[in-house]
Length: 97
Image 1 (cartoon, one colour):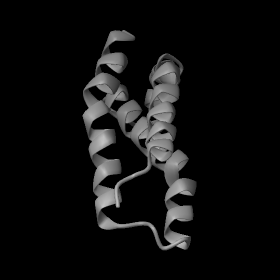
Image 2 (tube, one colour):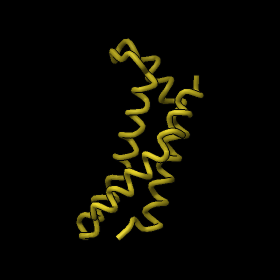
Image 3 (cartoon, one colour):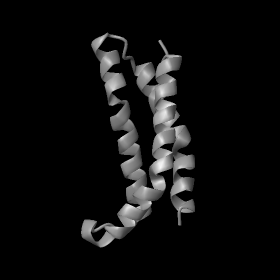
Image 4 (cartoon, rainbow, N blue to C red):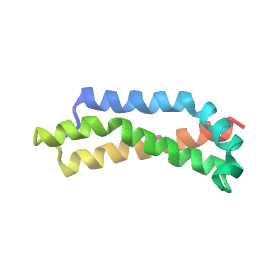
């Protein structure tokens, strides 16, 4: 069973939301670069955004698991959606400056 249209829309909107927040994340990680002991703030932002997307979608996955509807196909589909958007996320990070 594939991801429902509704759940796919939720995931896409969450990615869009995090895309809109990238300028603030870039500024935050650059400002705290030495404090966080990170070499590449842009890479840290990418990891933070990807983790945030996964965390924000976790309640949906949990609901699917508890209703016995979470399948390997759905997990693969979620990953493919996020991976498809990584180029867009990276571009936004690097375009921020």
